[in-house]
Length: 280
Ligand SMILES: [Cu+2]
Image (cartoon, rainbow, N blue to C red; front, side, top):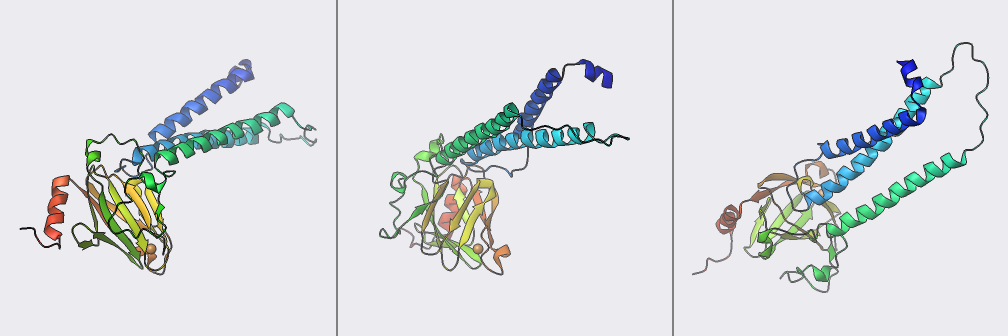
């Protein structure tokens, strides 16, 4: 075995190992199953970035650790070897190589992350989002837009429907959801699948964070700073809402549920719970 390896030129071995490493990293990134189910329109965009970063991370990790382990074994001290190591001072091509490669990788990751952030709506000025017309917003307050505020290339036919406004109040230690068009206050967030939801988040006391892992959304909720967050749920189901900002002794129990329902079922829920006087 050893004699076989010796007879193959080192450059070829390195090339083949490098190719195996890159292909293995790409495969790992494509097949990794660490994320929960993606239940919003926004999720595939986020997952794409995660896969690319995971591929790069795998390649770097296996490459660096592999080289380290190989060197530990290959260049270990042999019995009877009492001499000094080889005296080497600098290696310009190697130094250029290990500076240039990370620089290119980081530059790429930076541009790519920026692009994903933009596609998720992170760079969108609020006045272009079309939901500054929410009836209850006090216009002289400064309003912030969270990532996910909706520039993902919507291909859903239902996107033509007007977004559903919901006011979210975060307090120690609960989320409250108010549906201004039906006068419902609920401890659970009910939303229809395939329709954009516009959340207006406000905190009553300290900083909280509204996190729905299945939607790939996490938004800080800061007292005195109303924040808009839009998303389009796609997959019916029940998903956890978690407060992701340490907010006090019971922070760990500050959880709720978002229930994504088929539009008819959601309309029924809205009608059943509405506190508006029924129209004649
Ligand atoms: Cu909290």
